[in-house]
Length: 361
Image 1 (cartoon, helix red, strand yellow):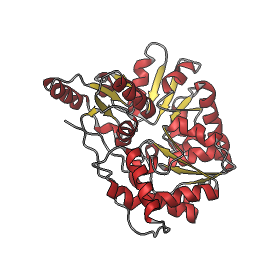
Image 2 (spheres, rainbow, N blue to C red):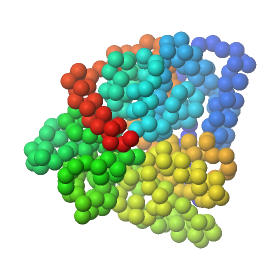
Image 3 (spheres, helix red, strand yellow):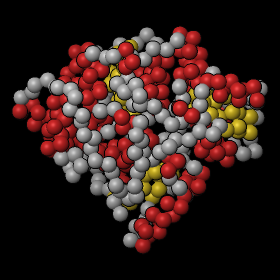
Image 4 (cartoon, rainbow, N blue to C red):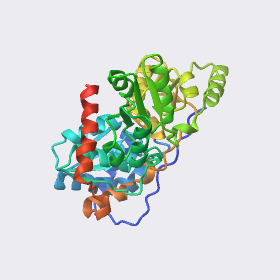
């Protein structure tokens, strides 16, 4: 019943790397293997093959004063090989804002790199994979927000952080999966518009029932939409028959029937923290209902052996970036790898994010 994780990404081999001694490569390969803690998937041989890339990336970060941020859904060679900070959207937004370096490299999807530029307009923000989009972000446009405002005048528009800079510029406050309930509770009035995630919107409707009306948009995350309550019930039955007390931890981007079948709901970072807490008190039979990267992090950071069951879903957008892309963008970034936004968009989207920071803290 062990969880099925995808194999390590095969580097494309389009980029030559700097030369390092055999001892340097071996030392780096062992560091990677020991950090990732998945010796069957990330063997010493596999780690040797990527060690020259991580060595050069880390060297260039120092030489060029670059702060490399990676979302939890990136692959372990990135999160444990080269990232200076790994977290969920909210924490990474603050990291980008507060980092002393003048250059931020964001290994993620496009909207996250745009968010880093919004909160750090005077810094250079690099995004190695310009084509790495997001099904939620792509589900809504700035015009959609203007249209829904016209339909429901006077209601504040709350946008999930998985939106483009142009969409954020049209909204009143931004939220993440770790703070959306708290922020929406604090907003004045008896109604809000929530975009674009319909599943989080449903959860919000249930949470605020009798207090606020919640108008929702019809967007979804293609990863979390793949999970269903029926699948969880099936896995629980199998686990019970095997004598296991399965703990199900789910991300709020999932549908209501998934959340109702779950023991715990939270952002990717909070899910990881809860999984590690449960493991520390002997509850090692876990099912993580989210993208595979969170499972990779739990395996790497747990001090005890875990029994992770089920099958995670991989985000094709988050998995677009490889070490070669990061190395190339550090060496000589292309124009499309440098985030540039209109000043008016930065100003208005910045207000939307500032409201989030103010209401969440």
